[in-house]
Each structure stands twice: as structure tokens, then as C-alpha cells.
Amino acid sequence: EIVMTQSPATLSVSPGERATLSCRASQSVSSNLAWYQQKPGQAPRLLIYGASTRATGIPARFSGSGSGTEFTLTISSLQSEDFAVYYCQQYNNWLTYTFGQGTKLEIK
Amino acid sequence: QLQLQESGPGLVKPSETLSLTCTVSGGSISSSSYYWGWIRQPPGKGLEWIGSIYYSGSTYYNPSLKSRVTISVDTSKNQFSLKLSSVTAADTAVYYCARMWQWLDYWGQGTLVTVSS
Image (cartoon, rainbow over all chains, first blue to last red; front, side, top):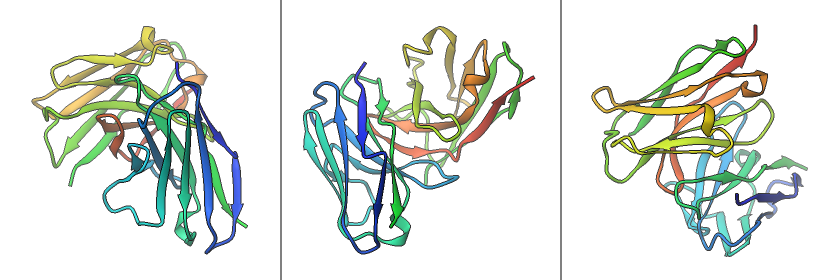
């Protein structure tokens, strides 16, 4: 099983600043990685797939990068609605999915 | 706009079987491009993929749950279902259904299932 590890567990950033979230895979997943945003009481929302492609309707301030085992989600200028929990998910193994444990992005 | 809606009991007794149904609207579950699946999230914790099904009935399960999980599809009703047997308190979670190919792009709102006597 591919294990996904996210860091940090909690990130405190001020509105308007940049946030950088990391996700590491226990073995290479190529670019088969997605990012999700989850707000309290809501289902996760797809942000990024293919490591760097924004999903439909996702603002340009969200960007993803990386390949292999190291991935980054960057939010260029944090808005109030961006404070949430973020999960990465690998789909390198056909139809088996594993998620990271999440990074909570909180207001500093 | 595709919508998914979970339904089923919110309380299940230990050792019994948890049963949930996901109803898909705004699109066909028989689409050749997608799988349909279940994900769960224990209170305050992260996401766990449970399993997936194709409209033809092909299934893929999380190895850690495989012995207890059955996912089925009813294309005539545009629904798919989850059964999880021999539940314990550790199975208490919000259960989501979702459309999946490689990533999961449409999710239901989730339903909390509590395992308790």
C-alpha cells in the first residue's frame, strides 16, 4: 500500500499571504495525485488532479506541483474562504486510492 | 449538474451490517467513463477509501476492509449500495459516496453512521 504523508499537520498563515502544503508518497506515484479541500460539515471538494491541473471552477490562486514522491499545493494569496483542511490522494495503483492525513490551514 | 445523495440508517448495532445507498441524479450511473464508490471519515479524522464499482458490476475494495464489504449497483434505479458487515465502534464515521475515475470529482453530502448498542 502506498502511504501518503502530509506536512505540516497544521499551518497558520495570515490572509493575503502564501501557503505551501506538502505531500509525500512512500513510493513513486508519477503525477497521479489529487488535492482536495474540506470545510467543516462539508464533503471534500476536488481542487487539483494530475498533480498540477486545476479542477473546473477552482481559482488560479491554487496551484499544484511535483511528481514522483514529492508534491506541493500552493495558495498564492489566502482568502478567508481558503481556511480549511486539505488532503492529498494518490491514484497510481489502478482503482485503489489512499489519502494523506490532512493539513489544517488556519488563520494566523 | 450531477448530484449524489446517501441514504440509510444513522444508527447500527455492533456486529450487525451497515447498509447505505447512493442515489445519482443529473447523470447516468451507466456512464462508461466512471466508477462509483464509497469513502468514509471517522469523526475528527481523515478520509478512507472503502471501495468502488463500475456499472457492469466490477468491484474494487480496500484490502483492509475487503472481507466485510460488498458494493452493488442497480442501474435501473441509478443507485449503488454499500454493505459493511460485523461492524464495531471503529466503523462509526461519515460515509460519502462519490464519482471516481482516478480522482473523485463529485461527492455526496455524507451521512453519519454511528455504531452503538
